Length: 239
Image 1: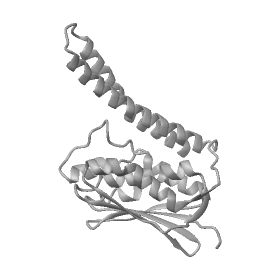
Image 2: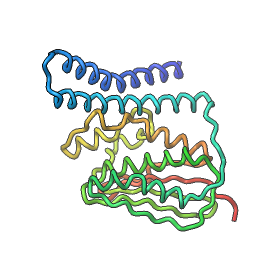
Image 3: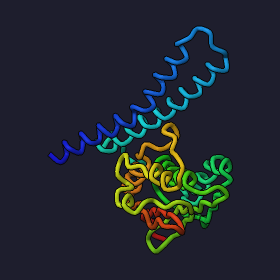
Image 4: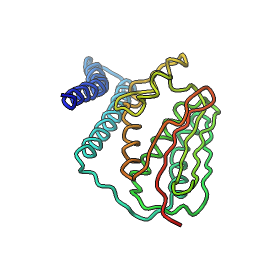
């Protein structure tokens, strides 16, 4: 009964998340076609809105497909040799253009030579998810810091940002599917969240699964007025 209830809840949440971009596509296309005489600029504006909605639909569907395969045990992880320090640098470099748009600095502290065996594509997704969230919730002219350290028999990766903290009542559920911290943090900051650009609440759930698939963990280390810190721990190879 618990499993069926969870499945029903999951389907209801997924339907809710998909409803908004579908409604946007329908309304924008109907509006664009409602009159024969429209300028090229009006059609372009409508297409830009439809494009944003389509991107959100694609992102949600891709995330749902990944989670479905993971739940069914159909997504085996690779264990290829790689260097975590290089992966951290690559992920930071990838998100810098997004950070620069908000005048945010991405600081990297990763020692060289951090050999590891894992699924590079999945680990890349985990780190980019964390960095993307940190950038979105950082104040303008702020700093997002990603740090890699080896602590005994584990690699510890921390992603930290300042800004509005995750509400205390939401923190225990932040890794649950479809739980979105962005809307709550935006309300606390007196702003608003665009339903076409905000997350669907699947990124952290996917990231935690990726860490677990590598025998590691992902946790919210802290979220207060000083900073929000997510910590990834991965088992390190023997020296």
